[in-house]
Each structure stands twice: as structure tokens, then as C-alpha cells.
Amino acid sequence: MQNSAALAYQQVGKQTINPRLLEANLLSRAAGQLQRVRDEWDTSRHELGTALAFNRKLWTVFLGSVTGEDSQLPKPLRENIANLGLFVMKQTMTVQAEPAPGKLTVLININREIAAGLRAGS
Image (cartoon, rainbow, N blue to C red; front, side):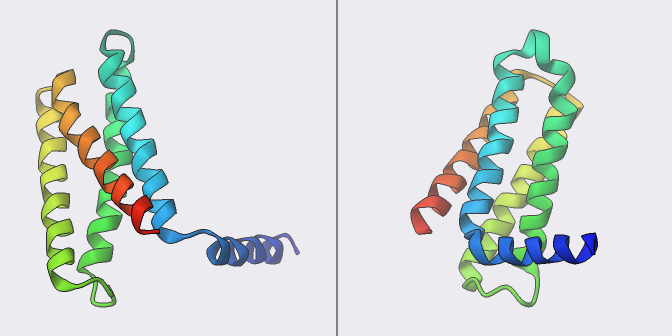
């Protein structure tokens, strides 16, 4: 019984949540986590790994989505998102190898800009 209720809830959620808005909210959440670590480096540096992992997982999903055969996005857009995603992954490795608060700025900005674009298009 409980399983069917959870399934019904998921189905309603899929019907009521705009996917672009969901993606925008997740990107904003990731940007917020990264900014908090950057802005409060002395007291929040220990949260860097968690914030980077969340952002990396999010971008891994995006990369999988745009490079999948079932993607309905135009090819040039898919390629741009894939290239941006690869840059995000490379920057993430750079930050992990040599942590510094300033290196988070580019990741924060990318997430915020993509989120703003998704919100404008929804």
C-alpha cells in the first residue's frame, strides 16, 4: 500500500514540476552551496568536498542527458552543454587538487547563468 502511494506521488510530481525549473533550482542550490563555502572559507572549507560532489553529480546527469540518443535538444545546444559540462568537471578537479576559494567563482557563475537561462525559457 505504501509503495503504491509513493508511486502515485511520483507520478503527480512528474506532471506538475516543470523540468527546466527543477534543473534551474538544482543549479541554484549547487551554486549556493559553493558560494557559502567560498564566502565562509575559514569556517566552511570542510564542506568543500560535499558541495563539489553535489555539483559534479548534477553535471554528470546533465552530461548524460544531453549526450543520450533520446535527447531532443538541437545538436549545437547539446554540444555546447556537453563542452560546458566537461569544463565544469575539469574545474572541479582543479579545485580538488589545489583548493582555493577564488577557484569556486567560475563554477558558481556558470550554475547561476544556466539557471537564469532555464528560468527564462520555462
